[in-house]
Every structure is written in structure tokens, then in C-alpha cells.
Image (tube, rainbow, N blue to C red):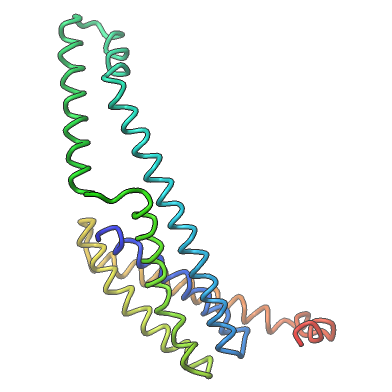
Length: 213
């Protein structure tokens, strides 16, 4: 659950920045909605696959480390000027602590495997990404849809930012403020860049006008 809350702000921010930029260029809300949907799918698939392989890799390395039965530690300790008995005791203690840590992590993660973790992350991205794009589906006005998307996105980012701060132990209000500030700056930059490019005389040449049609 904690990991899903950590993922949701990213799931909201990326589509929101995209629709903010598209709103400066496209007059059609449905096209913006479709493009946002594609963006959500890409983000969800990318982060889901990333979480899957990250989990597989972490567990593979951790299990391989435990299976080595302290051979790495014993090799390191053998280079130190300590007796063999001390080396064996230290290695045994390190191996025992690793096994206890492995048991603790397995209890906390429960039966969740790499596949279910990747799927959970992907679903969190989809749930978060729907917040900024749904207004463009229910309205034909780009400006009003963008305002609604901004309000919904900021509300979601604020709530999940506070929750993320509580989970990580960071000040919840500072965490929420930083997330909101980043999302606002990114969206403003996207909107501004597209607006400037669109206003450029070179972007309204006859050839480009024909291509747009």
C-alpha cells in the first residue's frame, strides 16, 4: 500500500504536464484525452515493467548473497589481522543477521511476487493518470477542462504528497509543497513552450497549415 501511495504522485504529474502542453496547441478536447490515455498506458507499462525487473533483480542478488553462506564476508575478514576463530564468529553472526532480515522482509511483503508488484504499480499509474485527463472527456472546452484538470490534479498531489511525507518520515507539508511546486513548474513550462512555438511565425507557414489539415 505504501508503495502505491509513493507511485501515485508520479502517475498524476506526467499526464497533467502533457495535457497542459497540449492545451496550448490543440483545440480539440477529445484529441487531448486520447493522447493523455496513450501517455498513461506508456507510463503504466514502463513503471510496471521496471518494478517487475527491479524486484526480480533485488531478490536474485539477495538470495544469492544468502546462499553464499558468508563466503564474501569470510574472504574479506581473512585479509584482516584477526584470528580464524574471530573470523568464523563474525561471519556466522553476519549470515544469521542476513537470514533474519530476509525472513522479516518476506513477512512484510507477504505473498507479493514481482509480477503482482509490477501490476500494482501499473494500476496505481493508471488511477493517478486518469485524474488530469478525465475532464477533457466530459467537456468540449479546452480552457475549462484544463482548469478542472489542474484543480483535481493539485488536490490529488496535495493529499498524496502529505501521505508520502508521513510514510517517508519527511515533513508532510514540505513534501506536499515540493510535489505541487514541481508539477506546477513542469506544467507551466510545457504550456509556455508550446504556446511560444505555436505563436512563432514559422509554425504558421502554408506548408504546415496544409499538414495540420
